[in-house]
Length: 494
Image (tube, rainbow, N blue to C red):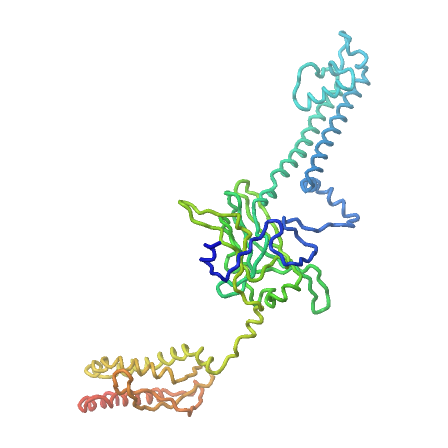
C-alpha cells in the first residue's frame, strides 16, 4: 500500500474488488442480464410450433449442443437398445430353425453353435460387435439368413459407432473450456487516458499457449425508441475499441486493458457520473481467437451492467519485472483505485469550452499567414538580387540578416488572400518606413500595412504591378548604397 501511494500519490484511494461480487454501490439494483458473467446468453426460444423439426434435420449439431447429461443418456440408450434388438434377431433365427431344442445334439448343425437361449444369443452378438471372438460361438455355413444378418449387423454397428463416438469426441474437444482460462475484469472503469475520457476493462490469458489472431468486440445493449415511435427493447450498438487503429487485434500474452474512447461518435457522449446512476444498459464483450494447440476457433464472452461501471477508477498494475522474465500478479487483476476524474460528460466539457474570439482566430491562422507572406517576399528578394550586378550582389548577400528581420516583421502585419480563379484578391498598399532595432539600434526598413485595400480578380492582375513592387523594393535597397553604386544600380534596374 505504501509503495502504491508513493507511486500514485496520497489522493488515490485503492479499492480491491472481490471475484464474486466486485465493488458495487450501497444499493444494488437487481435486473435481468442479457449475457451472464460466464458468457451464457439468457435467451430461451419458445412456441416454435412446426419449426421444431429443423432440429432433427441437423441431428448431429443438436446432439453436440445438448448438455453432457443428455449426451450420456442418449449414448447409453442407443447402444443398449441396438444390442438388445440385434440379440433378439439372433434368438429369433435360432428359435425358427429349432436350434434352441437341439443345441446339445452332436449330430445336428445349428445356425450359430452354442446358442440355445437369449443370454447366449446376446453374448454372441457382443462378441461379434466388439470383435472379441472367443471361438466358442460361431456361425456355420448352413445358415444363409445368419450370414445376411451378420453383414447387416457389421454395417449398422459401424454407422452407430461413427455417429455417437464422433459426437462425443467433438463435444469433448469443443473450445468452450478453453474460454474458462480467459479472464475478464469484474468491473469496467471510466477515467481519463491521454487527456480523453475512456471506458476501460481488462482481459487476460491464464495459459501459456497463445490465442492466435485474437480479436475483441464490444456491443452496447440498450433499449431505445426511434424518431418514428418504434420501440427497440434490446438495441445493439457497436463500441469502437480500436477498429481503425488496429487496437482490437490483441497480442494476448499478458493482461491488457481495452480502451473505448468517449467522443462524439460514442454512445456515452452525454454520459456523466450523475446520469450513470439512472442509466440502464449492458456492455457485452466478445473475445475471439484460434486455439494454438487445436486450431479451433474459441469465443469468450462477458458483460458489464451499469452498476458494474466504476466512475473515476483505474486498474491496478499487475506486471512486474523479475530476473529474466516478467511476472503477472493475478491477485490484483480485478483491483482498482480512485483517480481524479471530471464528473461531467464529454458533451458538457465541449459546451463549457470558451467561445472562439477574433484574436484566437487570428492566432490559429498565424502560421499559415506567416508562411504565405514569407514565401512571397522571399521570391521578390530572389528576383531583385538576380538582376543586380555581381558587385552589388556580393553586397546584398551581407544584408541577409537585415532582410530576414524585414521578412519577420512583415509576416506579422500583412494579410494576403490568394485565389486561383475569379475569387477576390487583397492588394495592400505597402510603404516604406524606418524603425530602430531593439538589439543593435540598427535602422531597418520594414513594410507597413495601411488599412486601405483594393480587391480585384486574379484574372485582371497585370505583370506591371509585380514590376512596380519590385521597383519599390529596389528603391528601398538602393537608398542604403554609396553614390557610386547607386549610379551603377540605376542603370541595371532600369
